[in-house]
Image (cartoon, rainbow, N blue to C red; front, side, top):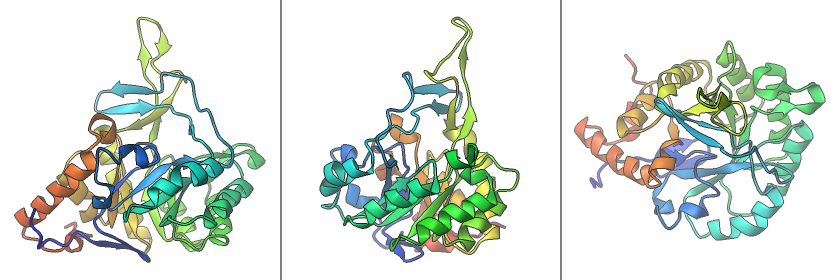
Length: 305
């Protein structure tokens, strides 16, 4: 691969070797992919969402292929933050790549406590807040659809975190820039745009959902044009770095996100069909940069005409 291409990017205080990260919920806890991918080659990876207590998630089936994408209804199943620290994190410390933990809760207190536990552990580069959860103390209102709630949860977690804090925004809002500004103003170091889109698939033969839960989250190539627009809007609205996430299949997809302003990207759905996709995309990105006569990947960022 052409060594003269500089793929390094700066996400606030965090320097990444390249702009390609594996997305939360698609890469397990990272260690499961170590025999398939050279984890040190990645810009980083985001482990599946961690909650204060273990969660069993939704009943099977949890995945369903759709035209141009995939539905998932995992239900945030995870082993809980304490088990992650003792059972998964020790093995991850051998890798140089950035390990980011996705964090969620159903109250601000839960978000804060998860991060307090992680703050005592070594080997993590940053946190990513999943604010698409309902706040049980506010009648189930979703954190990420209310600027005030977004601001409150980001400020509370910012207050207990010494590590960079990313916020993963929901696409289910009328104006995503309101949420982006609220998160940035409350202390977010970067924003991930965006989460999946609620959707469903029905088998007309059985007249039942193809998932164990009636609905799921749509991801994959079908959502890329929608999310590309959201990334562009957010990049125009805030000064903090933005990480684009949605439908990436090729190196060209990555560059499109950079052109509209993203600093880095997360790769998700394709990991299910090609576990080595992240590695392949990084190699292809180097080749693409040579083709377009760019020696530094950052020269492409924000160049939309």
